Image (cartoon, rainbow over all chains, first blue to last red; front, side):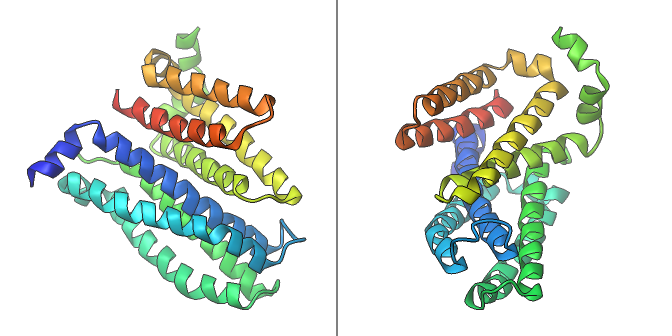
Length: 146
Length: 118
């Protein structure tokens, strides 16, 4: 383990990075959830899906960028802890699935708008996946194997 | 009084059960995400979701406090967080300036993370 990672782990930088990670995640998941609500047709019906998603897209991207920068630094600062944490492993699996769905199914739903059954299913899948990522992420703190 | 709160079944359930605290904690974060999303978009129909988000944050936040009231009461960062939330409330009542609001919300998240570390 390098001394930089040791420093991050033991200093105020760790909670600060975690805070930035959480701010990024609220942007990422909050904006995706709203697009999903729009896909489900339960809100913002006066705006088109395109309007909603284009207003939110820059925020989603900034959120994603923030978490993919801070996440690996947090991981690297305390690798043994995370690799031995079942909630972390679960989070990574869920994250991989959520990202894959986001850039395939979700993207296709945005390209072919309309309140079709298919789009509703995609919206629900997206909401469930991203919520599970947050749930597993939050649970890392509760499932440390000392 | 805080000790008595800590002895209630709600408090015991959240703090003692395997899933109580993680689930309430995750719902708290999800509600914050929902709230953040609704703040970024101007649409009258979205207002209801903003209210749902705020209500859920307050409800889950209260439950988290109830799970360990003595610990939170003793935490400096928890007190700081409450002060910041009070400032947000004042800012909202006074007509909400967006810049101030954004800085205060970011500060709330930093303070909240600080609770776990000090």
